[in-house]
Amino acid sequence: MSDASNYVPPEVWTWDKANGGRFANINRPVSGATHEKALPVGRHPLQLYSQGTPNGVKVTVMLEELLAAGHEGAEYDAWLVRIGEGDQFGSGFVEVNPNSKIPALMDRSGAEPIRVFESGAILVYLAEKFGAFLPTEPAARAECLSWLFWQVGSGPYLGGGFGHFYAYAPTKIEYAIDRFAMETKRQLDVLDKRLAVSRYLGGDGYTIADMAVWPWYGALVNGWIYGDSARFLSVHEYAHLKRWVDEVGARPAVRRGRMVNRTSGEPALLERHDAADFDQGRIADSR
Image (tube, rainbow, N blue to C red):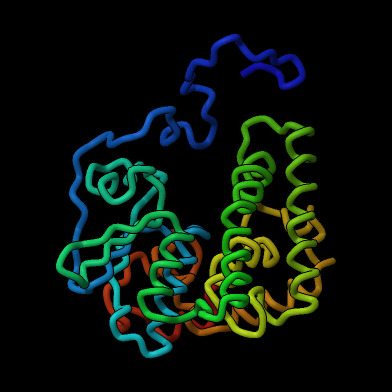
């Protein structure tokens, strides 16, 4: 790998798998399946294929919140997709999500199965299907969706930007870390100022906007991702954000959702096929 200060881009880029760093075994410049593998199907109407990353947690939190609110039709099977091992490139998964990213959802409650991919789209789909956690009044709905899509647009700067160059890149590049640390702190400031005047991101009520933002920014504030990044970014400065992180994180459905398809840390529930799969003794401390 060339020294960052001496690197000159070639006239035409070509893929060198050896330069892939930590994710060389799953990153490639083409899409599509790499192997044949059918997806399992459980007994519930909703079939989720995911892993307990922040994007996956968005959807398991939503499903657990729906069940907690009494929506029995939200029962689901959550099948583990080990993205580090390339499960997302199996033929069955690619049929559900041609982009080969978790989470992916199949709704088999109707005459024909419906596929939904991209976490934000899944949240909206479920909210509309069950009439929950998405306001119907136009101004409130617009506010909720604005913060939902704020996360969709901002998240890559936190994860693929700051998180990658600070924690995962094989070479520490000062310019890249400074650039994305600055942007991440700007995002934290945006959230902190909003939550100084609003209990939740969309207003007084808890919505899919909170479910989308919390898994990423709650994990950052709590120091659960990217090593010592919480100290590096001085997240203690954002008191209003911390208040919201603690309030949302204390919700029982959030604690359960964070366990599902989790592959590291305790407690973890690799797959979830019934509410009885949760061991109540482990829900008390999901960190």
